[in-house]
Amino acid sequence: MNRVLILFAHPRFEQSKTNRTLLAGVDKIAGVTLHDLYEEYPDFNINIAQERALLQEHSIILFHHPFYMYSAPALLKQWMDVVLEYGWARGSKGNAVKGKTAGNVLTVGGTRQVYAHGALHRFTIREFLVPFEQSADLCKMKYLPPFVVHGTHLLTDKQHHQYAARYFEMLSILIAGAYDPEEVNRFEYFNDWLEARERRS
Picture 1: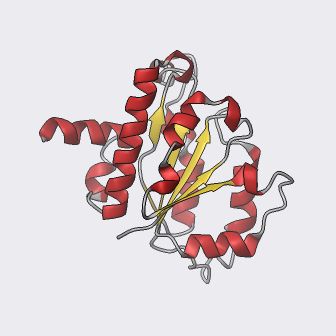
Picture 2: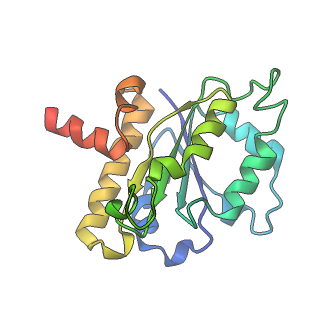
Picture 3: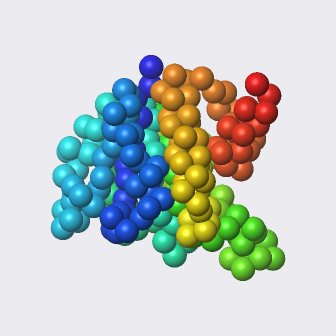
């Protein structure tokens, strides 16, 4: 069984209906650790030893955050800078997270259609996430396609709960290791793979 660490970073979590719905009950799932970085480190003074111990206890790391200015909230970037240091997570002698799996869980205000070549934002979500993917590669980790919730301000209550159900489904699959990484990586989003899997069943 895999253990999943959700590194959640949202400076206005109480105002985010989408993220509150996605995360409701996640901490009750066996094999999942929900780690709220803004709750833990409101002063940005990250306990590096504690964070590294958490990483070593888990085989799958999910960076769960809103999509702020084409990237992540500042604390998550701070976490990556100080925790995944050269000599520990990267470099010829930095093998502490080698072989682990990483991925992003994003909540995005814009629809999927506006994140495309020739559209408003000019690039796809996957292209904006290249720094995360390359960071995972630099740390000798495997990278999965992101789980993305688009158009958060347009979603109905029913749609919010449908996304939450998909998120729980993804977590269950990751914990059980019931997926082929090569097959999943043929899809742009983890959501897409889940939907294709449902159609086949």
